[in-house]
Amino acid sequence: MSQESPARTGKWAVPLLVIIAAAGLSADQFAKYLVTTNLTLHEPVPIIGDFLVFYYIKNPGAAFSLASGMTWIFSILASAVVIAIIVFARRGKIRSRAWAVMIGLLLGGVLGNLTDRLFREPSFGLGHVVDFISTPWMLPAVYNVADILIVSSMGLFLILSFMGINLDGTRAPSRAAQRAERARAEAEAAEVMTPIEPDLIDGSHISKENPDAKP
Image (cartoon, rainbow, N blue to C red):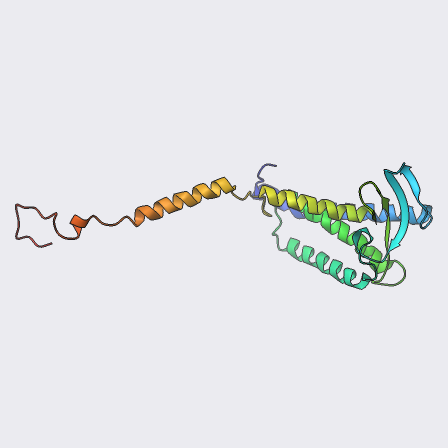
C-alpha cells in the first residue's frame, strides 16, 4: 500500500467513512429483515452443507453470542464508540482513505448491532441482536453481518498499524530508517562534543619567534 498524499486524499476520507458505515449498516439491517421474515427461530437451514448454515437466534450478549445478560453494558459501550468516532471524524484527524475504510467498517458494524439493542424486543436498550450465520468448521458461535464488519475492521487496523500508515495518510519511517537517523544524530553529537586539542589550551602553540606573547 503506497503512501497517500494528505492534501489529495484528506477531503475524501470522511465522506468515504460515512458511505462505508451507511452501506454496512444498511446491509446488516436488510439481512436481518430477511432473516426475521423468512426463517424460523432456532431452526438450522443448510446453505452450503455444513460449511455455511443459517441459524436464526436472538442474542442478548456481545458479538458471537458472548456474555449474554449484559445487554445494557454493550449498548452503552457501543454508543460511546459511535460518539467517539463521530467527534474524531469531525475534528479532521482522519485524512487517509485506508483508515477511513477501517473506521467506516467499524462504525457500520457497531451501529448495526446497536440498532438491534435499541429498537428490537424486549425493550429499548435491552433488545436482542439478530444472529444467523453459522460456520461450525471455523467458529462455534453464530454471528451476523455487523460482526463480520467489526472483525474485518480489526484486521485492517492491524495491517495499517504494521505497515506504519498514519491517520493523515503519511507513512511512519521503517525501523531501518529510524536506526539510520539515530546513528546520524549520534555521529553529529559526537562531532560537536570532540574535545579541544591540548596545545590550544596550554599555550604550547605560541610561536617560538615571540616567546613573550601571552596566550
